Image (cartoon, rainbow, N blue to C red; front, top):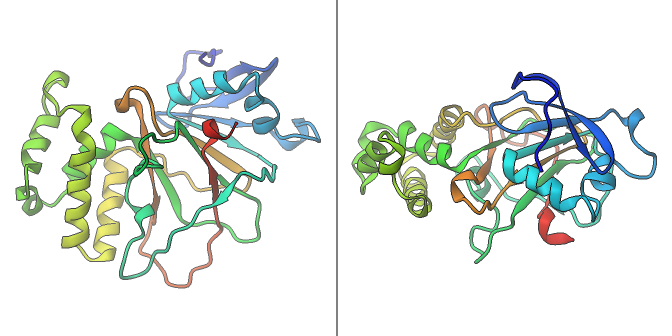
Length: 262
């Protein structure tokens, strides 16, 4: 099931009808949709994400939309759903955390979760660290194009970059993208200091046209984490938009693997 647009403009207002309710959506980015239902229009007992969109009889249709769009952002979420887990990971001036590199959740598991939901609960401290989200193909190509020229001599990275510039049928096979990405990640970790590495990934965010909108309290982002067509899968990372400041207070995030928890 796909949302039915009420106009022909990609960036204009549209509606999504699910579970007998109509939701206003917008498209502020080249991919993904944003649902923003004001609190006064929500039922007292449930927020619309958990009360409607993830209801048992609606869930599969909604997750198909996440698959199709790549990203669905739901604002004004109030729940304290017990299955959320705290997002952990330690960054420092001298070392990036694993979460700062582009990744799929569950990358070490035989089967990756289909959809990952990352949420910023209401709390006292705002969050200044972005979560960058972008299509897998765009990320790998951007990582190649953002490398300093002298680093392209390592392995077969220059050849891979040349292949990504060719027609679709001549580009690297989707099954090789994880290997290419892993090679680049290991290279920049080895060759660049922490802040240079963060600056490199900010270039990747821009080149991949990543979604890096600031977090709002009560916002959930549902990300297509394991599409049947790997080329349609999204990746995400913790993204410092400016050089990291030590001891900077920041709001925390929680997450869950939505499709697997019902």
